[in-house]
Length: 159
Ligand SMILES: CC(C)(COP(=O)(O)OP(=O)(O)OC[C@H]1O[C@@H](n2cnc3c(N)ncnc32)[C@H](O)[C@@H]1OP(=O)(O)O)[C@@H](O)C(=O)NCCC(=O)NCCS
Image 1 (cartoon, rainbow, N blue to C red):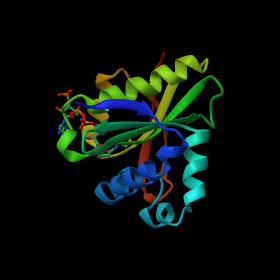
Image 2: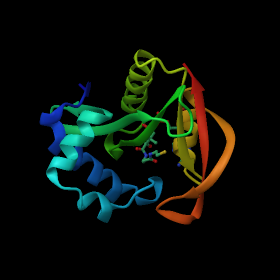
Image 3: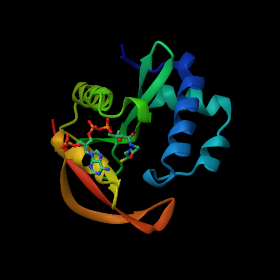
Image 4: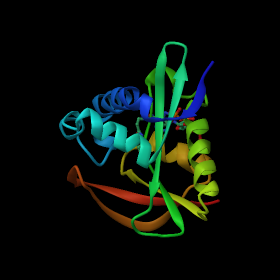
């Protein structure tokens, strides 16, 4: 059984661990790099989990997925979904959708009217996943910060 829970300061090490696993598994899917995240000190992870809305998916064996809600730098009415990752053994079992629902619920409670995210060209599994959950392309596109040769698109969903 999987439990989705918002991280607190005591979960900082678990958040670091799952984030490093995500960047090892899918380095091309994210706006940062494994090396940059590995360099963040322990107190930096405590700050992260206490200033943003980190949702962790826990199995009896440990954390198997993560999704993070942050303020949207481009839209005061929206919140931004970042860091979405589920370990391969839990793909297709609904864990990822439950993580997104947790971020949508947080954003709603925070007074937002929409949730937005960026997804890279070629990540068809993620695109289909987000489309199923009601996210639609806004038409905005730009280079992936960690690899400007790759383009990404902004998706948005009203809440
Ligand atoms: C993106 C991610 C969180 C989605 O979670 P998931 O459990 O895999 O998602 P689901 O299985 O519920 O949905 C995936 C969809 O893609 C489809 N799909 C599966 N494999 C696919 C492939 N190789 N190519 C295209 N579509 C694929 C599935 O059929 C499903 O679509 P459907 O609901 O229309 O049938 C997960 O795959 C993941 O962690 N990927 C690596 C990290 C990543 O890409 N994060 C997103 C950053 S924006």
